[in-house]
Image (tube, rainbow, N blue to C red; front, side, top):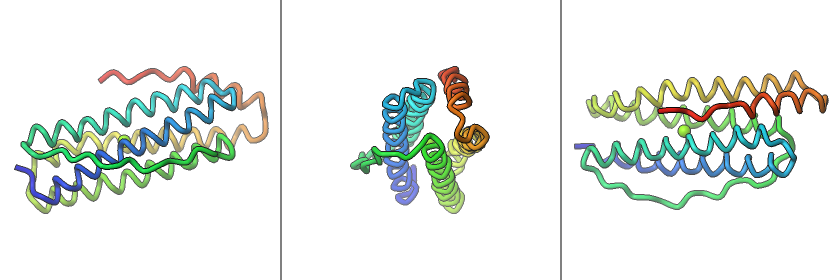
Length: 166
Ligand code: MG
């Protein structure tokens, strides 16, 4: 059985993951509006991934006999300044999520909840990937600078992102 605090933290994490999904969907909408379909696709796939993350916590709670309590998803920004600003926000957002996952891991460790620690291992690895992939695009966008050519090339490249098979 899950402790009350791990249970609450995991319920909160479902909201955080759905909030991430919503944020990336909003970013996808911006890119569609800016005629950058590759970046829009990248963000749309990110949206799909975040929903999967929420479902993983959902399933873990159910598997452990805990109650799922869904909460309101906070509103997200709809106006952005540039592709670089968006990916910087995405990178900062993923760093924040890493901190949240680490906090739950610490809690599980304090409770000797080995099953949750094992479950959270997947997320710890995933966050390394998330920070790497968003940080990489930030670096590329900085290289591109004000070059429309470079931006279109990068858009094309990001549009080739494959959906995750899990
Ligand atoms: Mg996530």
